[in-house]
Length: 166
Image: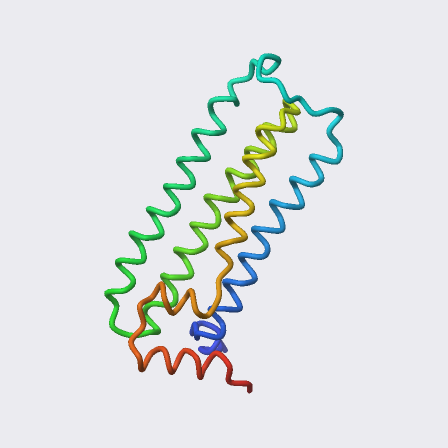
């Protein structure tokens, strides 16, 4: 028998799921970056010694990922806000956030891989900036309510349901 409660996304379960997913993406990328940095032999600071194509690819892909993730998220958010009920907004919002996190984590890992191949600090700095931005996107109850532009009744339900203990 399938439990129907498991399929229903509530404000409390949304915040828990978003926080868990966000933490996994953020700390996964951070841990990978730290490990790669620790096993690196040396650090290169001069661009003259780095003849890799990554010098061009990593910054361009990072900018595309940063702006693209924000553009995609805002476009999805515009569609979500038009939904009538709070329940109809939660699932698509979760999906939009996960895609946004994925864009940023993927490029942070790409930048870390470029660092591991070339030992150039430039790639590590880009990776750390992306991880910091990803950390800044930490989901909170206030951010979710603001993003979804909830009505007063939905805000009250969201707050009441989120803090309700069972």
